[in-house]
Amino acid sequence: MGIIEIIIIAIVEAMDCFAVAIATGLSKSGIRYSRAMLQAVSFGVFQGGMTLIGYYLGSFAERWFSSVGTPIACTILCILGGRMIWGAIRGDAGEDEGEKIAAKNLTIANILLLSVATSIDAFAVGISFAFINANMVLATSAIAFASFAMGVIGYEMGKHAAKRFKTKIPEIIAGIILIAIGVKMLF
Image (cartoon, rainbow, N blue to C red; front, side, top):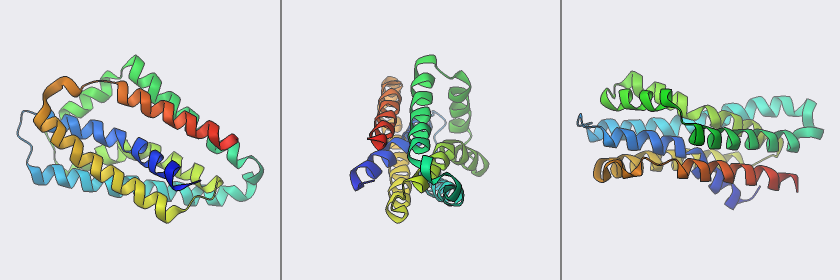
């Protein structure tokens, strides 16, 4: 897997962080900048950490699944991409409500819960990285940095831009990109 693919996956993985950060920025309760930055740092740490945990578990399992590793990685990415597209089209009121509550009450506990929730997909991506022997220093760094950056950018955009950014198009595009990268792995 090349640098370009790793960077694309990092950006796609950070899209959930971006969406939550926009919700935080849109909050009318006046979230302090320091809390928003803590949230962004937490996103980066959890995204990178979950990627590594997934990688190590996938590396352990890779001994038994080495012949089917690439199709498994492809399947994981396609499922994640399909789930992102389906969630965007269908809508997930529970997730939106959770983002609204967290934006109004951005406590340390809420920051940690949001960080765990947004990093579940990074765990699965880490497993797929084990099957294709990705450069984990680059992949983890890229995912952690992209998540932090998207947390900061999303907060600023939400804070300064109002509700016109409440669209599902970026989530659909991110899902299509994950599926395309998964299919590319097979060929």
